[in-house]
Image 1 (cartoon, rainbow, N blue to C red):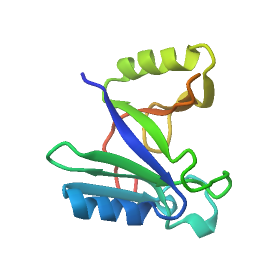
Image 2: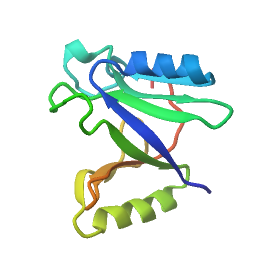
Image 3: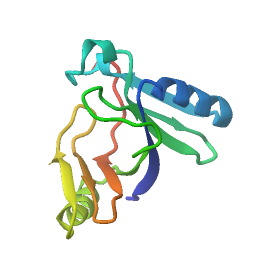
Image 4: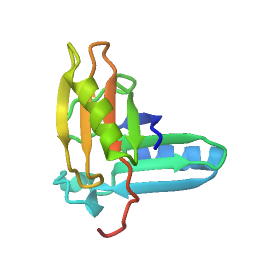
Length: 144
């Protein structure tokens, strides 16, 4: 199995617009899942905002994006990106995610475990200030 890294863009209320724009430029497939389609418990005003989205083109372009929860601080351009580390291989994600989480100076924001969109998901910031979103890839099921 392989592992990939992908740029993950963090926005406030503009993720759908950004994903649509990147899709218009690069083509391919686009997925945009609103908070309202999940059991994320976000504020009602955020139901149409994007909890998870991506554009993936046949020529290799891939970007992910989401709208930062209203309960979290946000300043445009600050912490604008995460590095997304993904694989279909659960053991590989456990190994590398565990090593990053256990490394000196790492701060774990979301401990590794099941989420609404992945059987294994975690979020951490390493000692260099890089925030990692780490998960096992599964296809999104509409209405699941």
